[in-house]
Length: 97
Length: 97
DNA sequence: AAAATATTTAGTTATATTACTAAATATCAG
DNA sequence: CTGATATTTAGTAATATAACTAAATATTTT
Image 1 (cartoon, each protein chain N blue to C red):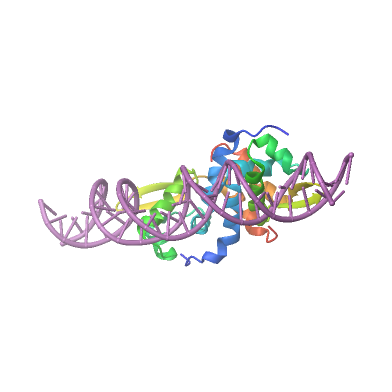
Image 2 (image 1 turned 120 degrees about the vertical axis):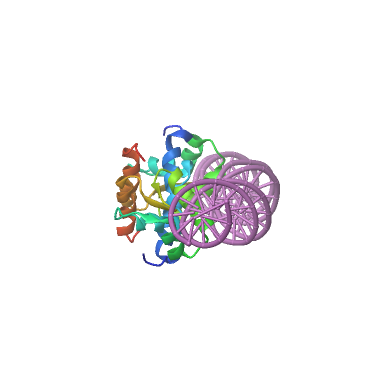
């Protein structure tokens, strides 16, 4: 077996880690259809404080999963890349795992 | 937008969370070819203590990602289900995300 | 310019995670 | 049975995460 190299998995692990929270995973699913949504929509639907939501969104953004677009007073988020979708779907379909 | 339901994403989030650590993600990749490997192999390749490795393996096992099989003094781990593979591959191939 | 709205940042506290050491358990070899 | 090997469990300390409140920033409206 090859020696473990920490760096080889680091970014990928960061992406999984970002998805590894119910609220954040739900957010990404809401964006799965390609539509964008503003922070206030997420805040209302989830029922947490603005500040907390902002942190979750920052984690997803830093992992490269979502992108923000500020328009007027509001900030809209959308998926950075549709390539994240199969990752979600694979798990969503299978009830075994 | 629908209201957020914590339970709807809980198990899926647990799977992602388990994959969200470089060492654990690497372990799963080592098992990706369907072969099984014993704890001592992982310990040697990663360079951490037996106890620490045992904890990582327990997290993957509890998430339903791997299965253990005790034979003699050794414990062998393998993937619980090949359905986890596309989840890994989707990210591995794309360098964008 | 002042007030209102939307969001982020900073600071705090409780809880969770990670990796460690030491002790417990289980199996095999002599 | 005894000692050696492989692994897990328990306990601990440092660090990270998650949610909160309060304050800061940015944009629009009046």
